[in-house]
Image (cartoon, rainbow, N blue to C red):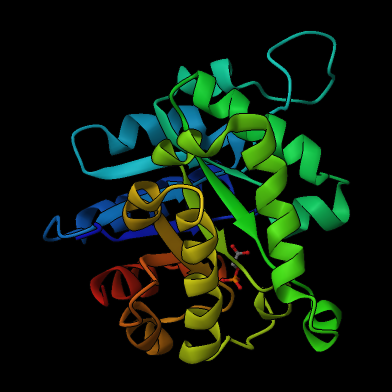
Length: 248
Ligand code: PGA
């Protein structure tokens, strides 16, 4: 049986004061440790939030990681830097990174490897745009996004990774994929991994992301290949994030 995971992606929101109160609110309401839970906070809030999460089972993550180890890469943050703040996870290949900041399949694969070199679990985000879905390109897009990482890191690397399926048309739009639409793609991803390694496919956590909310999380999480969620907007409120966590 796979353990479920809910990850909050705070994106570029909040101040240090609001990050502290949100983290404290989540920790206060955690309840039973029935599933994994993490928050991916802005880089500059990692030092403070890493102190707050100590002693709780709320894990910490970053929203990206550099594709290089160190050097003259102005504005980048390395995996080694993240590991000093007990980052358990790092998102790689979020669609906002891919579409606004030019992260390519190849650089996402390099980021994935950098995270793993420092024992950080990469959360590899994949997903199609509306146009790609309408042109029946969903599976081809996902194949290419997965292949770039598999080719560089090897399939064995997925034993210490998470995949997040995030249809771009559902992110921040209020349009959630139906339970069946999401399950179809999750199943496809698991089969794709299984064709290369059945043991890893059975074990890997595949999260759904895209306008997941307290009122639709239960249905999504009940699907056999959906192992939890990557939550944007609804993770900025402790109560709604915890409700989603408790829907597992
Ligand atoms: P959303 O974002 O929940 O606000 O749609 C999800 C994400 O981008 O990870």
